[in-house]
Length: 402
Image (cartoon, rainbow, N blue to C red):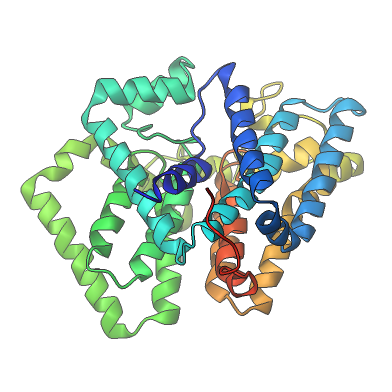
């Protein structure tokens, strides 16, 4: 129990559950307040951590300055102002605070801690699915009762968990955790992976596609043929057991929705006709690609956020959303922290870290707005500090937090 509050804070900063509606801003401010309290109580540790992130802090400052200018001078959609605060300043402060706790508590293996909270999150998702009234109550508490949109997701077997962005960002974080879990040497790793994958299926299939891509890259670049065959045989056996025992029937609606996603991919890649041209991927590669119309829009954007529609047009593609709101300047400033992290990963020859960043960025920001609808920036920075830069931080010179 000595690390109980550390794991509570770890869970909250990774999954960022917030109450919908007017309470949302209060919850975000409470996350920031908690981070600042930890930072100011442990200023020596926090200062050393911040020193490793000065370039990221500068990039975030420039991004915030541009967003404020675009909103108050050029009258861009102000929704991005709040989103920028919650996707940059709050996660960055939480990274410093969490790393401070990690050091002060003398933790040594962040990936193990990450996998543990991912399994806890998965357990919560499964319990909420198996208790529908409770699951529905938590979903409407976190996502809000937004009429047909939320109810349609719920009826399709989606939206189970205690986390923010259940329909997108949650599954991306879970996919990264699942790949880390399968790379570990643990007798329970396949059980953990299956639990995490169930939590993905219950919420957003984008995480399943990301997991498959990262897993394929891992096995084809790092594993022996024997290990690869053993892993796939183990997965096939587990799937056969699930089918034979009828356990899958408990998750029938979610599995049908996930299978539909693979049909869409098949239609998009191989020109099959499973969805008769109405799959979501057709939109991502067609009608959702609403490009800027002139030089000014390419450079500065149009100040509109197309996710929720504008004069009959809408888009789910992250790049399009960024370009239409703030142009290439906004896109560049958004990418600056990740470009710095990728550069650091290459310099330290941390190729797996670079692969995770690039694949998540390419897939996630194509399917949705990776920056405003997920906690990916937090995950990228915390992995950078506690994997790549771990040996450059002195873990032994500071006492525990009282």
